Every structure is written in C-alpha cells, then in structure tokens.
Image 1 (spheres, rainbow, N blue to C red):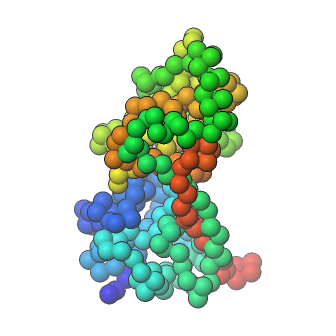
Image 2 (tube, rainbow, N blue to C red):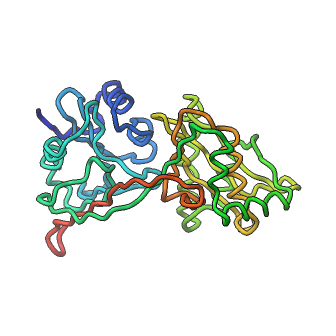
Length: 298
C-alpha cells in the first residue's frame, strides 16, 4: 500500500470519479466537478491505483500552506472502495504534505485521525431521516413545535412553488441567505454552478414555498447522490421564518418523496429545520485542526 500526493492537473478524472462514485462512504462533495467548482484550488492524496482518495482544498497564494473547509462542503475525508480501518487512515495522515502548515478541515466519521497526528479534534453532528416509509409514519413523529409551525403556514394560505428557476433561487439566496452581502454574492455564483451541473446529471431539483401573492418565502435545492437526498442551501425570508414556511417546505418534501429508498440528509450547517423535531437520526463527523507554523513565519 502506497499513498502519494498528487496535484490537481495530474489527477485521472475518470479513475477519481469512479472511486468516489463506488466508494462505500462516497458523497456528492468528492466528485471532481464539485471540487473544481467549490474548492477550485486542491490537491489530493491517492492510495495505489485510486483504491482510495482524499482531496485537500487549499487557499492559493505564494505559499500553499493552508488547508481549509469551503462553503457548501460539509465534510470530506478518505473515499475508499473498501471499508477503512485505523491502519489505512494512519497511512493517509502520515502522507499529509509538510507544505500544509495550517490545517482546518472536516472529515467523515471513519476518517478521524489518531492522537499521534496532533490534530485538535471536535465532534460535530449531522442528521439523516429514512424516507423509505409512508408519509403518515413520518408525519406522526412531528414534534408539537413543528406541527404548530406547519398549521400556521397552512392557515396563512401558503403553497408550494415548484417552478423556481436557478436564477430566481440564486437571487432569493443573495437577498436572504447566510453571511454578509459580499459572501452571499460569491456563494450565489457557486450555487448556480452546482445547480446547473446537478440538473444536467438529473441529480436534483428546486423547491420552494410562496404566499398567496406568489412571493417566495422559502426555497432549497435538493441534490441526490449515493442513496441520499441532501438539502444543499435552504433559504428563508424573515416573513417566511415568522410564519412557518420552513415547516411547510419540509412537509411538502416528505409528502412527495415518502416511500423512496433514500436517506434525507439535513446537511447540518445549512438546515433551517431542527432535525430533532422530525425524529431524524444523528451521526458524527469531525472538525480537525492543526497549526504547526513557526510563530510569525508562514
């Protein structure tokens, strides 16, 4: 077993995507097209002939020394055909290039580094909900808080808005999304790239909630991959937040997708629904950090 460091331009795109696609722990974040659009500057650690791969997203500059976690990528880690064990995970972290003196990234549960690698590790939580059940079973588990919000949205006469264009969604995000104005404008363009590429592959759809006048109150793009349907970047206006639009959005999603052999992935950093209010199941991932810079010197 050998793990080597490879620059983006030297990566075999077909072999890489095949590994991510068939990996036992694959997800949408690992595909080359997704990394190129969101990570932009990245290299990778690759085991043998692409039996396992680990993307490393860095900030460009005079020195490529900082690995960071960009927006719209919850977690990365080691994507592998065969289940990982501590021995293989150690090989990857042993091969981490010394050029990266500052590391701040998130990895999936099976990629947690050992203490000997010197990372500061903190556990984070995402949630998933099985859609392979009836809508009635799913709705029976709504909490009183969630049900009250849903009742409020129904009383307000809200309705689903299924004909949203990517541009309308992006404009709604730019106005109501998280972060400052400059960050939202930057994120808007990244979202459009993701959405159009996912739609081209038949891997997602837009959905929203509007009031009686047709004003958009909540919207999201749901992207499907690896037997999951993931909330990519939910957006809600102040009016929608106060009047239960998020509850109606989620309820409509369950009504139209219940019974499918999919896990709904809340994509925790983005979710505007509290997963505990719909009895979703938690699972961990990890924030790992290391700073080995000499004080005052990059």
